[in-house]
Length: 224
Image 1 (cartoon, helix red, strand yellow):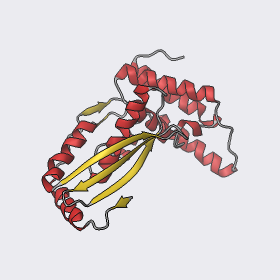
Image 2 (cartoon, helix red, strand yellow; image 1 turned 45 degrees about the vertical axis):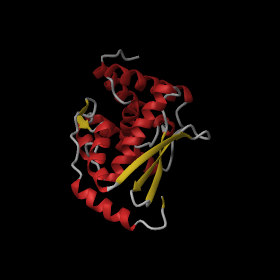
Image 3 (cartoon, one colour; image 1 turned 120 degrees about the vertical axis):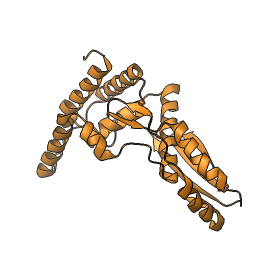
Image 4 (spheres, helix red, strand yellow; image 1 turned 180 degrees about the vertical axis):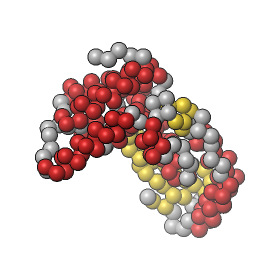
């Protein structure tokens, strides 16, 4: 985080605006999590309504990291006094290397960055999402993790072909249901407790396949 030499006026205005901000409605459906979330436009509207009235504005700068392919989104928050604070960047890895994948990653990163900085509750909490997941999607990863910790043995990572297959499946599911592929991917990796698809090991294949097949069934797609 970088900031101007002084942020006294910025801090006063920010504090006042936080008292005035109204949490936006979660009116975007996510059928796989059986929950609702706040889309980017609603997050932005909630922020500008309260913070602009107190002299605070923001801008976001998305860039592509050429070294790892991640989308980085930095957020600059400014006050009319000239004081400012720069946050960032929040990094998201697109699940598909095309314009649509990049656009989806940018939207996802912008929403999460703004929500974190301005205190917007844009998603259902983790406990709520956890309760709505398929039963064996919670049990299998936990059992696998426990076994791995006991033995100290880690199975080999899955092949690049398998990773690309999962990415393709998730992209098909997202298109069929008009969902955000980044959020579907995050749900899968969070459920399996691996961080990202590239961290999947062969021990995760059974659980990953079960979760993917359930999502495909809900989306009306044929399982392989």
